[in-house]
Image (cartoon, rainbow, N blue to C red):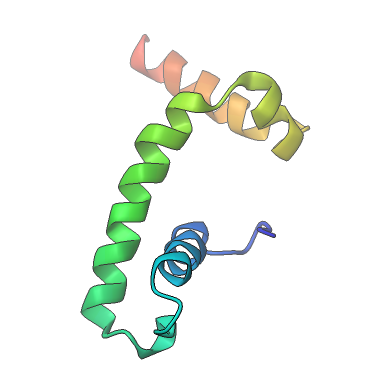
Length: 80
């Protein structure tokens, strides 16, 4: 479960790591290895996952439309 104050990239990276190397604990990895895996996970989240995101899916997580509002403001600033 992910909430508003969770480091999503680190949580997902740790979960993916545990799935592929259950014999090694995430916290036992060197910091550099953790950072590398988190970086790869951020790239994956910002490309593959975002490309599959739909407005109805986003609305489930952000029913007030706050993120959509940010994106509209950014679009207005870019096209000003």
